[in-house]
Length: 343
Image 1 (spheres, one colour):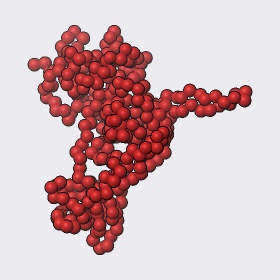
Image 2: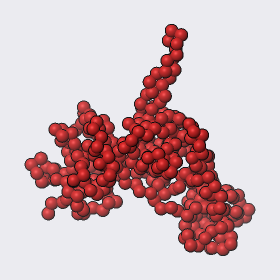
Image 3: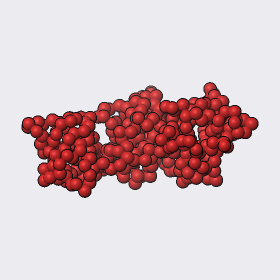
Image 4: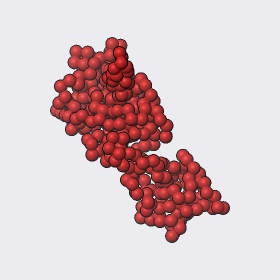
């Protein structure tokens, strides 16, 4: 029995994208005729082998509202064929099915694979730590959170396998907790509005005894854990299946932070933007990076050069007032206050 190839995407973003008249992607001059999917591939990388704009998903994969109604998966072993006439990609298995070796796509479950086998849209390892952590919190959100008040033998710095004591823990939220410290305040560079506070993730703890002062074991640490640090119940992993697409409208944001406290970012670095859900940003949106044009003098007059587009970012986590994005492509170091806008 012929294996059915399933294709997944989100209907509404596809319709919004497909409505744009000028989004047909441009083929690369060195585009191959086919590509065999292997473990470690991403949908972004595969599309980038064929097209200059790998994020223009619906056109690249020939999606439309009649054939695509569910999220899609592509698996190792699939063969990606380039249809140069239509400028789209198709998924199939060499030597079977139709005369060109391609099995027609069908919105049905694929036999023999689980969704965990599917290749991701973008490098999963680059964003995995950011999917289950709050990252951005409202001002004062940690004020009443359970607090680490001490450790055995008078220790003030804790790490993995150490024992600590916490006040304010509630048994009804379970025994597994995350440890945070309030970080810097995010401020909009244009309006000066406070957008939230960065929650600095320190590690994990598990309660071994609930009481007025509960006992916890530090099960994982990425930074030193100190008295006064706060505990938060895990919020659950955010959705990590995305349909890369441009926003439906014009969105212009600024880079307000580079994760890790540095001033510049490179490829596969996480950055924070000063726009969020209230501004129309969604997980999966792709934005173009721009550097403000320099001022130059000529014959005694000042001129401002045009802004320079130099890269792309992929929004993967959205809060109300800020968003986190992964730098996918860049020719220059991403700097604070650079612009990220609808491409």
